[in-house]
Length: 371
Image 1 (tube, rainbow, N blue to C red):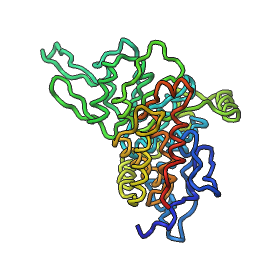
Image 2: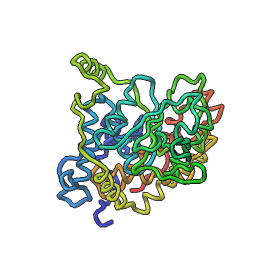
Image 3: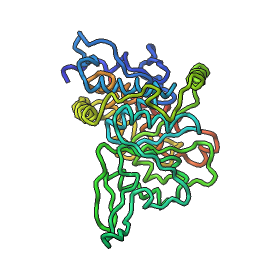
């Protein structure tokens, strides 16, 4: 850790909306959405503080180029794109929450195009069966044998649209794929392609006819990302593009092109694995997680799996930011998207209108930060 500065405060760490930490009270600014807006540090690090310019790391430059390509099709969702990249770097799954029409499907399609990855979309409905997702045995009349027909889960990025609209039996069919990266049918396990992540969507306002995801399945998602409605200027840009002939079904015409692939992603994952984490940062992550278990408003706190997820995503964000070590600001930036779906509010807290993100924000403000 000789390259790490004396103070863990990272002035280059950027939060949602580009708001830096307050100067008079370090580390007390908690971003509302919990995801960084940008990850493009400028220049190198002549002081030797563990920063690297994008040009010094081709794999990181490739991923930064991916975000620029996605921006050709998707307007105003930079934090969500960053979250998706972090999930790919960590090999984790993402739960996307937003009202219809905020470009959830378009984002996944644009991301897979920019990364030269295969993607398949499944509309989860009440009559969807497990075999419709994982695949099933089909009788072949020519060979008089049963052969396995792969389901849409055999892809790199599977878009599970409105996952909470399908019964628990079908939801559970994804658990093995998400955890083990394989599908077992008729006693035979079949590996899924690599990389493989599930990007599941759900509507935050329409609950009629839905089946809420159980805690065990929610815990399998690395991040829960909220996709807000665009601001006025961003919505004007969306309308301007459509007025100019933009077709969301034709990404090639929009100029979205492959700028990275599985090889660059694999190199990036290897680089993230070497990001250093000081013992004080490990203790800080554990303290934040343990504080969720004793929060009066929570009836369910974060498990050790959540602590591991917070560690891995913080390392990925530090690497995307051009650093070789993790700071407390990295942990804070990823705490909300990494933990918000792993906790449960008490009924009385829900009746009082308390929000999960507000409680997590209070925890981040109260847990002592390593200096």
